Picture 1: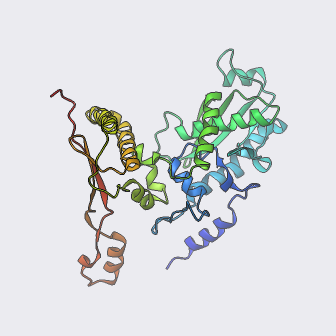
Picture 2: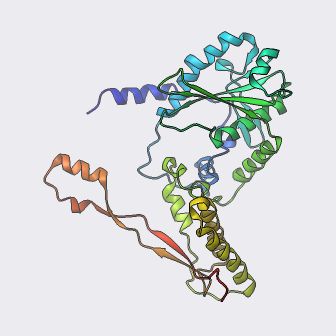
Picture 3: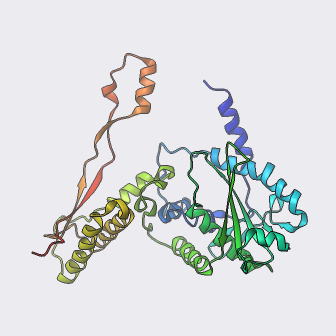
Length: 353
């Protein structure tokens, strides 16, 4: 029995940020760089045609989110306000959400009326405008932050783009700051120059995800699976990736066989250097599977074969722990079969015959 945790859980729910617009209708700046498939399913959870079930063992945690919110509200925003006063806009209780089509952003703040000394501090010589965006992040002290996170950089471009589009201000840069969650005096800052091409790509990406009628590519899995550790849809995604065509054997037209042969050869080449090209390998695997699925084909003799793989046996550790507490229960009754998989076998050779 616990006393403190449920108390904190209940109180945290009362502190969740409220939004002035329906976030299901847009993709936020902090979301646009995440896995397209996960974002698609989150935005369609209320859609009877596109929704999928969340993993039954998935638990929505609030710790990191609340850490960032509390730090920003009680320390970062007041500190910025104390220094910049009325020159700090859209920060703290005055935050504003900007929306354009399927894209939205709620920046942490913008500093206007920069002095010459402030400009010299932020920008390289000859760069910058009279204002700059400021973005607040907290970081796990175990995180190696020699460089800013890609998804956060993407976020700043979206924020700058929307502010430039919908206000009189034209920020050319954003100061992205990371504060160590354990030692608040440890702060790293990265100055991100605005790239209009990235902003335009974000607009197109948001529209593509929000108007899709089928789940987009599993970008988190393609990128190595790190993002999958925090995804509520890993089981549904696995089912989608293992969605083999019904027919095991089917006649294939020569043009399609040649297309798959070219893709398979490229995959074989990338597999030889998988340590440095692992993402490309998974991307090619997904492309081949998508094309096979579109044609209803599992196998092209001498080129590629796609087959289901039975899941490995394992132990349900949570149930085992509960049984151990009760004592005297045979742990073999908690043996489980792992999630089934699939195998894409590339049979074509890269060597000349």
